[in-house]
Length: 126
Image 1 (cartoon, rainbow, N blue to C red):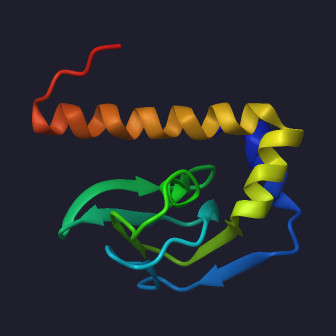
Image 2: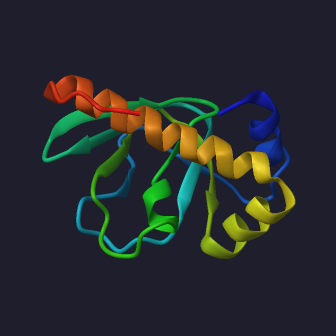
């Protein structure tokens, strides 16, 4: 995510503080929003296998706002974290008011898909 996009959340009054080890969600949990990391690191895993680490400026849990259903991954704070939760209403507002935010979310999704494909040895076309 770009610094400009991250700036959308720097002055949010909805910042949450979580200690290292905090479980944001587990595979199978209901979906309720995405998270923007302002500080700290969050490990993302599936079936105990680390997929990625979200750090300041990154988002995680974004699939929750695109597809309904249970969470596909787990997210646990590796360090103390400051995050902002973006629910569906806020997400739709951000997409409408700041279309570049939607592009950034799509870029992050594609980057994660490409990374997973590389790790699995599956070539992706496009």
